[in-house]
Image 1 (cartoon, rainbow, N blue to C red):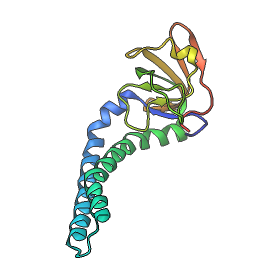
Image 2: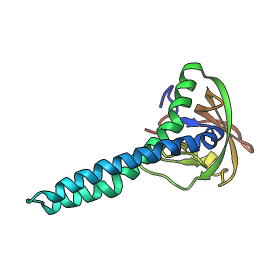
Image 3: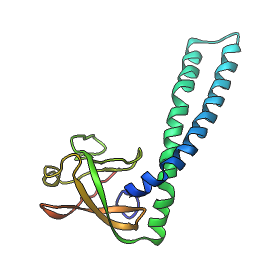
Image 4: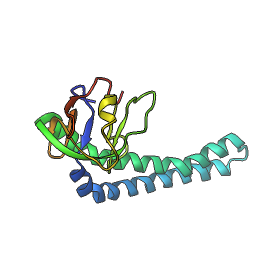
Length: 173
């Protein structure tokens, strides 16, 4: 979060750069799989292999490469537009589709999820309940804030029937 608002890459940028992001994420995940398998093989050869070591190494082989690949994809899809928006951004308005409005958590109350966004982006927190009630999945909304055509730091959501609504503090804590 920079400028007090969460960063959201544009759906156009995400869709046009997703192949590049996957081209980075897959080798990163494979490289991590190689290192985790190597560690697992080394642990398995140990004469004093404990159950805990076996389970932790096995977990690492199964889960860590996947998680690292997902994070690498998200970083590739957000790093460039985030820095561009922070350094050279101006007042921008971008269109997004709503994926879900029913989710909520302790870290992100009154959540609105945007469609077709990478992990760790596309979630707006503390959206006023009056605004959330007017939203539904698939609906188009306009986010306004500082940014470029590649993404923005969302400060306002424009909902067609109710007009612009300022979003509260506490986004993506």
